[in-house]
Image 1 (cartoon, chains in turn green, blue):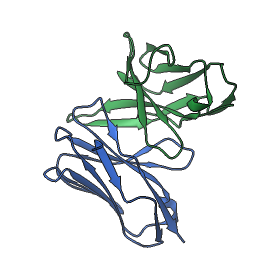
Image 2 (cartoon, each protein chain N blue to C red):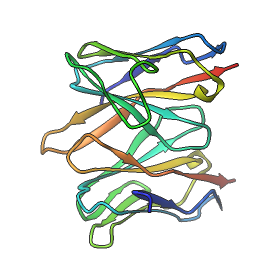
Image 3 (cartoon, chains in turn cyan, orange):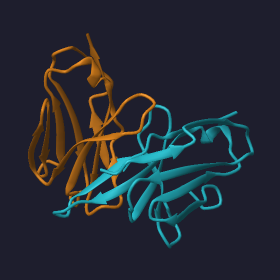
Image 4 (cartoon, rainbow over the protein chains, first blue to last red):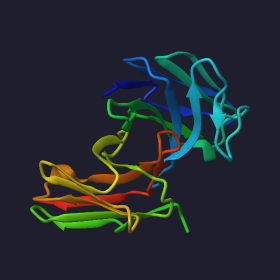
Length: 117
Length: 110
């Protein structure tokens, strides 16, 4: 299984500022995902990030608010721009691993807990 | 109707109890089914993985998939306080577009 690390693990930010979250994987992966998990809620997919192409955003999420970089097969960043208190959430990076036999598994990083004041 | 629904709601059981967690879904294209365990302030960790219909057992955990009923279950035998966490079901058809259930928060009381 892939081992995923995220930085920062948590942050408290002021309204109107931006925060960039880093995701590092210990192996090369094609697909990386960014999720948001609000308190007591399940996971909401923000976007899918493939190396060498623009990220694909889900409905309700736009590139200007959540720009994503994917410079190589082991690293990605998500920026939360012009933050408001409604952006307070846990942001999770994940990767998909396709195993021998064609099965799919998805692994998650530890998350970044963001509080916007 | 939501794409994936999960029950029960928050659940408290005594240590040693058998726990049953369930998800129903609407998309018959789903082929791969997963259960994740998420401890407080941690990311989800993959617990069980099943392809198509059938059962899979791993220690105290058993995952069941009934595609004809669009219903999956996770059973935990001899539950322990360390099993206290939120359990999320997830599913996908051919990778991409993983869909997650809302989660069930389980508390196992010593």
